[in-house]
Image (tube, rainbow, N blue to C red; front, side, top):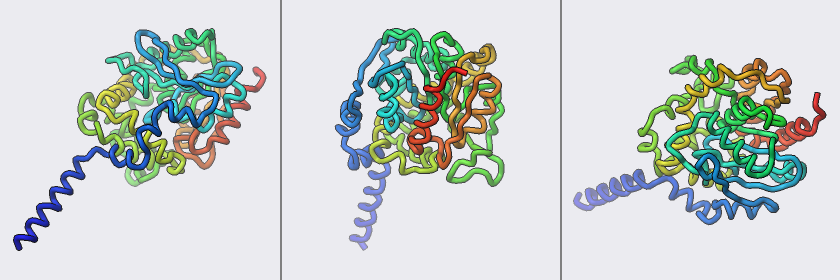
Length: 335
């Protein structure tokens, strides 16, 4: 009996220790820390270089390569510039590609504020100007799509063409999102007609997500990949380790949640925006219906392309389709 009690206590202690062990330790056992640094990732993308610029008082990290007209790529949550790595080499054959870690993301600065999309768009404009360009093509996915839209709305003279991927700008319709899902519509995979965006509300809370997720952000990310990706394998172990490392600290969680906490300001700003004068491409899969419905009212020169057989991460799940749509659009003659 004594041995049994000792064995039981030992098992309980081991289980408790395992529960307290940060999940990033398991990720590092699969992919070493050296393998997910920006410099290590760049070795897989010949012709691209990493750099930083100080814009509006914060450091912006970006990866740049290629030749031709400038094309800025803005990633979303929970990713970094690496979210575009599957399409960057081909795009770089035609354009000077500039993949940016936005304010609060990846290796860029994490200030206390300025996470409304108008301020973040001004960061990107400052970077474009520092790189010697007066205007650029702007493309964004997820939160990056919202920043890309704000860039075009606030700086149309600096926007050649605009590409938005799977997420619409923040409009008054966001204020009507249901607190609870409709009965029978919330499953392991997103229902495009009944998307339950509970994390929009969770990320509004200040302080608590950092306490819950610091050192364990993989918990939320893994759930998100399962719910939002149709082809989860498209985001492989290395990709997941990169994104986990980028968001695993309390400060990174605070900063990225700032993007969501600024939604109400973004909605106010959106009310004053004029229709976009430049050509706009809307690409999407589960978010396609809402994205096109919103942009049809905002972009008279809209082209909409649905990405087939894909979840939310269109540029990773279906890079060939995204590349074709982007290259056809960017290279098309002005209508």
